[in-house]
Length: 358
Image (cartoon, rainbow, N blue to C red):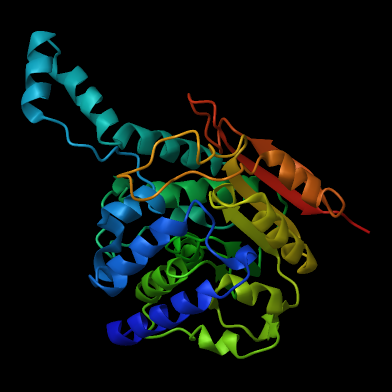
């Protein structure tokens, strides 16, 4: 994908996004940061190293490590003063650098596929495209927090379904394209992946997956902009849609996924998306978001005083149940193993819903 053409497309659709209904615009959580991410791509041309940029690490590239400066002289003095032996020092450092967190998730993932790995998730090996700030190697393969998060989710799905191979997977808020990369390595053949996201996030995913799939180009967003209807059966293997294109979709999908991004939206936006998704009749819906919802904008600090990481009103798990209960039933929910139990009381919960039979 040529960088000049990529930038031109991002500019055009970033401006197009401004004129959309608020239901398809960036939420309060994303509003100011979205502009900073856009400027870093367009003005500074940092797309080839987006995985290590500070603004991106704050928003859509999760890490196990906390990227704060640790004074090495302080650590050396601390270890010496408290007579901490080498083994304990190594253990302490492995927590700080994120290794223990990654290892814990990998162990859960590894044990979860002992009985069944119908999707072939163990085949996954993350690429090193776009200068990742953090990757860990286990059993000769590379993983990030994003990939382990999705692998745990897909493992949860295959452990709670029987002979289910999703052929059409639609995701809203797919980050930089982790799920699309995982699907490439699976045994799920002839699938279609549809990623729906705000600009420039959808452009970043498009750029990254063009590297992963070694394709020179994907279809332009403009292809969908001009159409009144978008028939799913006519889509390519990998597809990228802006939020306002979603309502144009016609046909059925097998699986809908949302990981970590519904919690960053206003309830009205989530309700609208779920309404559209139900019309596409997915057999399963897989969600992973904060059970209690995010803090509101007014409760917490601002990062660097330039953008807020808060929401106006939290989206809680009860919203999903209320929106889906007529057509979908809960298969299973989890916080401890496949979700994430947190000490601050805001717990990441994974939910699997199945379409009710008529």
